[in-house]
Image 1 (cartoon, rainbow, N blue to C red):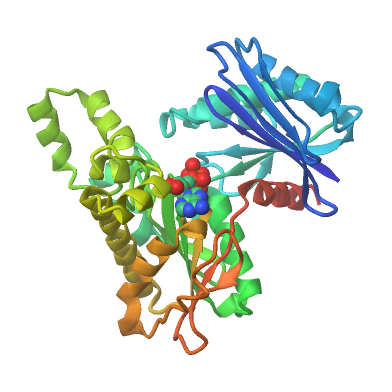
Image 2: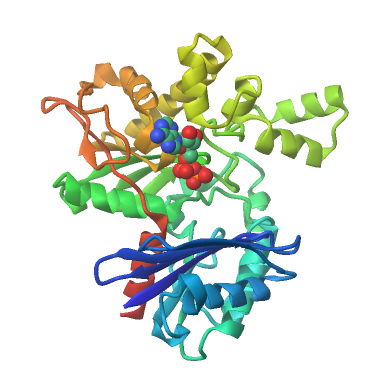
Length: 398
Ligand code: ADP
């Protein structure tokens, strides 16, 4: 069974074609610069590769190109699109309308589009991509939508409500939704299997740390809290996003710097996080680690702020769940950054967590990194959001 996974943004269409027999990647790539000019980068599992400038006025032309690179030329991997059993689409915001993965209908696309108010950057492009996909794939091929927010829909009211006038929730739908749900779901399930936990009696904290980062608390396989909120700006300090701040800072900076709300949001989304904290050195942790190691104090401070913040969220979730069986690190930073894992875990000596420093010297590998006598097991579990979407797609078809 072959599943095409699509992650569409406003100007890009990332894809992976997966063979579910052995979960291998048959092809992957990106049709990007949609609405600007157009560019495709396509790779096959056996190492063939093309890069080409194109003309993508809309998502439809990008999808047509996607079909072309899969079915013809240097990167051909299938004879026709009818070999694909289904298309699974990543959708950022499902809000309270979509609590589960579902099949795409015209009404579903309209509802996803209508939720654009809650996710302006993502949901409208998703709807455009869904319509474009429908136009280019064979009529009988099911399309499935998998929501970033769905895994978090089990959060209790006390976790998702903000301390705002209640009408903000009832009338404006302002609440915590959480994101990276497919990753938190995939990794927390894998943690239960890999660590031999009892699924129905387990408390797991997943630290998905990448450019965008979020942490979730998962009890018996269900999310009970997560750090991202109405938008992916809330929570831990990220690559360029601020994470939590005193909301009054926005007014303060606006007045001092003469910025309007777009200007302020630009600062919080693009100029903050470890990038901003380090005085603009980089949002990439490899650069920050190098700079810190060469004695750059701003880089070291940025890493300190991030790790301290992560530790406070993890500690908060231990309290929220009244205990924890496993803490898991995943995504680019969580899987690869030895220093960040060590600095975060240094905060938990009081809980009897001991890091196996030698085991921690790994990158991108599934491994337990706590000592055998540690009171809580700590592990690195690589995430795979495309595979998670493909699994969800297959599960729905069944
Ligand atoms: P996102 O999907 O949110 O864009 P990723 O999950 O790809 O982000 O994570 C990107 C982050 O992971 C970057 O800060 C990068 O520095 C870090 N990272 C990736 N590989 C390594 C590595 N080998 N060593 C240290 N950090 C790494």
